[in-house]
Length: 251
Image (cartoon, rainbow, N blue to C red; front, side):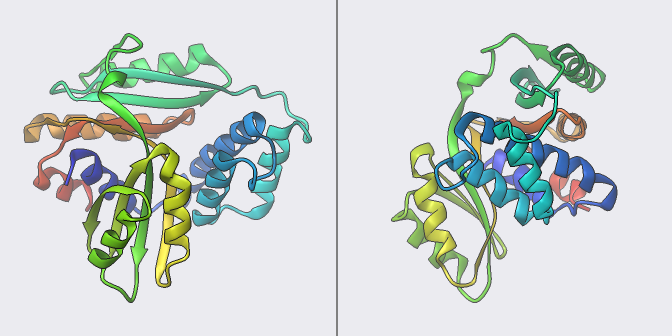
């Protein structure tokens, strides 16, 4: 199991508390706004928007919130907030690469907050292009399976475009070429007993960096602190974490 998949699995195992649900809804709404602004308000014609709204519903975001975000992105609803997509690159303690994707209405504020988190955790922010070359944009789908063997589902999904998969109990995480994400999601959506938790575009590392336990703990704290920032949408890393560190983080 890759370092990315192991960390991703731990993130999904952590329940979203009531205190953080508001922050989660804000991140989901921002993605919907930008998707609607760029590709239009019809999810059937805008795949990015369809992914964003499906993920919002999977997180129990109210339909009214979703509709308001679509209207705001399409320019139907009023609102002065102009969101910009920005990417920050850096290194965690131990040398693992980190990509931070953000949506912000204030680039200076977000850059300052991200830099502060890197510095406090013993990492460092890098120039644009320093680590992004080590990642590929892929489609990523995570599902839970009930009533069928996850291994059988994984093998069937290969014919539907899945390039790789990771099985963790009754959960399966698939990766696919970017252009095959819609095909893979449609296949999984049509399988009885399969629930899609998330389907999205993700930056998948080409190779991973093994961290020792001490550096791994520092890196995990940095990743968590970055994800807590309101403007940060997604955080990716090529770190490969020791199992004992991830086990402790999941408790």
